[in-house]
Picture 1 (cartoon, one colour):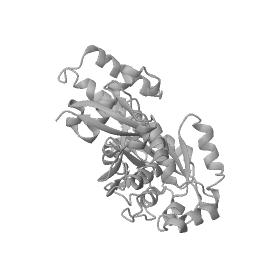
Picture 2 (cartoon, rainbow, N blue to C red; picture 1 turned 180 degrees about the vertical axis):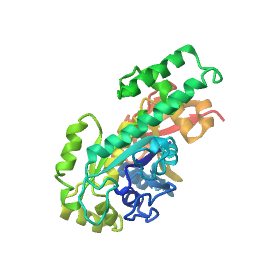
Picture 3 (cartoon, one colour; picture 1 turned 90 degrees about the vertical axis):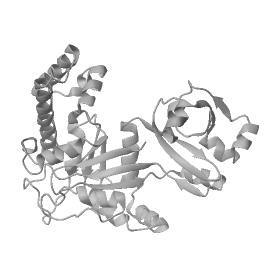
Length: 356
């Protein structure tokens, strides 16, 4: 499995520029007017992984396949979106389809790029997005409750919906609810329970130390995952290759690309990890949830593998790289035989034995 991140925010905050940078494309139109993006732009990006690069070389693999992340550039949201303002209903329906949300806020000043509210206030912008998402969830819950008899909901499920409605009416976070209640509400499709990353889009000169706008965001949301990015700078970097890109990053003091920070935050946010398969034909990275059992991990490769699972031969990627092959790992006592109860670790190189 990969994961899908939706880039959301008010119009003209840099969503399409960031999308183009992340996907190394010019597919998303970036222009100085609201609702430049109407239909969502979708791009699939390979997840860089040095471990896979080395495994493919050691195995002399004909193919190398990275894990992937899908970015979706969603139309700008405005106040009143939950009531259909701007591209409201369309915008909200597109958010429902993603695993996590990147809340992009404008933290840069520019006379050349208009702001939909004619002022730069990222905290206020985030509150606008939050409010519209909550209002949309309130409407969704009310509709569910109105149809509760036809939908054959249990009394417990109705009570959970009523509790959530009260919470949202008060402006409280649904994250405070018990885990089992949140799990049911996620199935309902409530947007406010989507995992989120706050991304501050700054000017190039504020990329290292931030500015007053980013300080306000960090102060207001101390418990959120927050990343600072210059979308325009990332877009420029995306056109450079290899050593040229590394030199440019070093000259500007930038240690990591924005996509690297976003991927790491996304994996952490969704409790994801990577395992590998490696051989002469192919070396490949696979994405799974943390605490996944070996049979279920095998099922990511092919559904039949989960049903026909016998055992897994497991080697840590670092050991594989150190000793150079599965055979050498076996000789040095680093190859493990694992059964159905084995919980796959991040970085495992696995070979599955299955019934024919």
